[in-house]
Length: 103
Image 1 (cartoon, rainbow, N blue to C red):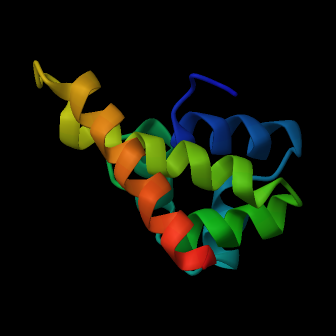
Image 2: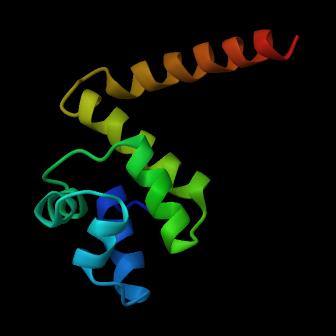
């Protein structure tokens, strides 16, 4: 899995596909400047936009969503001394919730 930000990954994919920023912005109904800021990490992406871009780029949606969710977690925990411990507790809670949902 990439250590790259979601925006950086999306920009990389778009450039590999040789899609102009302006064209993609029109396709997802977002202002060009806003999409540019999202790619640079200066403006937050939304789950909906990540999904739309995965579809447009014909790229693995789950991979992009994992990047997106990890960016959200990093944003909330950056600079926190207890960040790693918090992540481990959250992981245990998620495992417990998922096991309850499967029953």
